[in-house]
Length: 261
Image 1 (cartoon, helix red, strand yellow):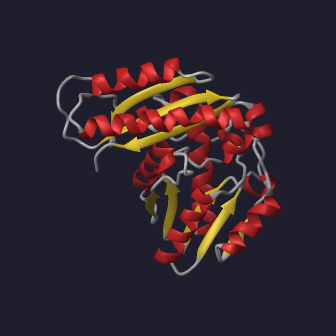
Image 2 (cartoon, one colour):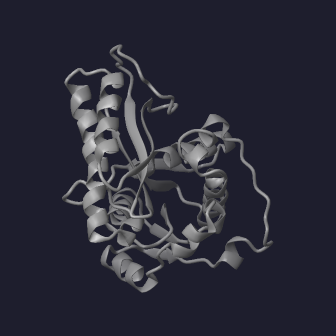
């Protein structure tokens, strides 16, 4: 059994997870649940899109076997349920630092979904790189019988990473957001040409800071296994990933590009 855990507002990125699950497992389950405990901003929770009829049609077109559509009462029958899982440094850097409590909510709901669905394999998108690390860390620490499969980010033809939040971008906002993937692929190309991480980050920062309508939260080149930042003039042979988060049109977007496997 394969599980694709989502918060709905499905797009091609989610469908790629469904397709991967169908090739790897006998039964594909997609869960749709807008989890309140992983939103540290109540306004963000309120604005999150919930086009359930459209989502159901997309799942049918992708031949998904089962839709699990629980209510908040089903997921949290005891109301204000207490949960804390020690994620170490992962809970204090990058997304963890910008969204306090977010990964506590993620681990809380993913653990519940694993308990309820009991999948053999769970499929997550690379776009949420740090979230994939968090879920894998929880699985390892709790020794859960679930294999985590990370699927490559799906992008629009323009390069913009597919995201449920993209529907909230205006036409102008979508055009402005293209600089995010441009900066990341500039880093990737420069890295393959032998430029240092220090030079690459500085060049990308300059591009993003000059771009109109972009409020950058962070940009970093990190080791893939720890997300520790690498800012040096030395040549690095270890697997790296370039990550960023930025606000465009009042919408928070994240993206990343793997530099070497």
